[in-house]
Image (cartoon, rainbow, N blue to C red):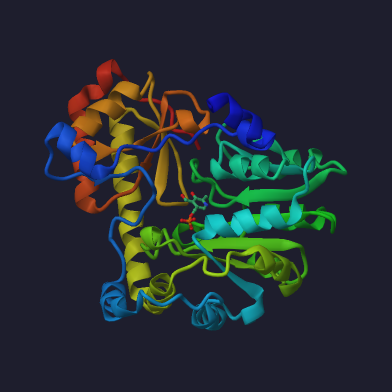
Length: 378
Ligand SMILES: Cc1ncc(COP(=O)(O)O)c(C=O)c1O
């Protein structure tokens, strides 16, 4: 039977490696007999979400027998006012990953090339392979910074899309304003640039190169998320910004009810609570400083981040460290799935208490024989 299925499935799908999910939290609790789990593995907001969101979800729970407004009319209106863009310059997705997917599905033909950084968000490769496109992965520099000239060098007549992950997951590095300006000037009109800005709210530097000032004049789709700073990851809601000529085509293949009514209402409410956003930014900033300081004390190498996670490099294979922390109820993310060496881990910045517990446990581990201070990657 299995062999028959293998003959039926599309070749493109066979080339995609199966995704290996982590254990559910409840399962970890059960296995290690733990009361509490500190999850620092998926770049979620450790502060939760705006309290008002929880209230509106309860207030609207009675309508779940009805289909949602598929167009996301009120959310588009709210975003249009918030961002000062036209409503038809916004598309709503089941998470920003769906907007990335709709862009690639709308524009990339089989055999066309999509350029994106390495290491970066894993779904780019999956989405490109899914449509029969050719992934062109550009290694970031040794310190994981972007060199956009290397992206430009890889442009061929087959290039259809270039993805900038900004800030980049898992490195937390960014494309700077000047760099972006020069890069976009050289991008021909037959290429679509996707600017994945899922973490942009966390950026501290004023030199950050968002594609927002350019989307009206260029073929750009900016993707943004309610999963991160707004704390709505489980509700699956995000959006894209682009010229209506581009988004019109993406709207044609968007599943008609891709986002739920509750997710739309939650997003509108979350958008209104900018105090919660400010609080989350502060918690992240303080957590970042605290972790930097302590990583340095412990001799753990790290890449300075503009997001809510930090890429760390241990002197040895980190698999044992990840396992030991897991036993204590702290989950961090090993980077083998990102095709980095097993010395790398990505740690989401938690609350003050979570960060302290992480450092306590890391200190106890004594980093299995690591001694001396390591160089910090700048
Ligand atoms: C760079 C990047 N883009 C997009 C996403 C997806 O976010 P969403 O939940 O909005 O689909 C993630 C999630 O981790 C991410 O790291």
